[in-house]
Length: 132
Image (cartoon, rainbow, N blue to C red; front, side, top):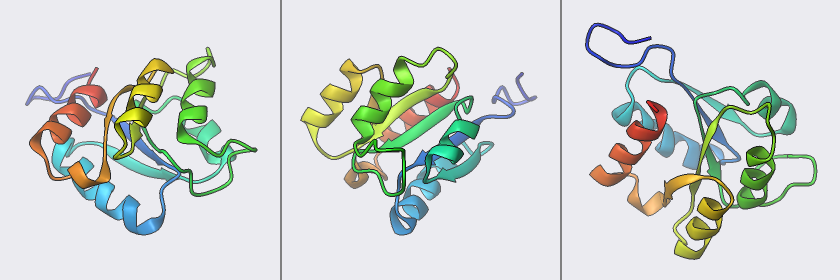
């Protein structure tokens, strides 16, 4: 459903496994990239279960929170990619190129690092993934 300015209505983006300071910085970037998005924080399996239908999950490489024995964001992306009940697109948040490659091989969209939050390419990448 598009608004009068061509933007998607009802976009929901979940920040998964981020500590509060990192989540605040990522939230600010998402607001610039997708101003109409509803942004939620997820730091446990129960919250993740509720957000599996969010449009986009921005998953931390090293998860902060409790995800039923899953400790790695890449492992979580693998699990979500094989879950047919999850319609959410995923992106890894990591500065490490090897981790990004592994996440993409597991089914994630190309992600970004925390050092790149203010880059226009990061804004474009998140905007495109959120509006697919």
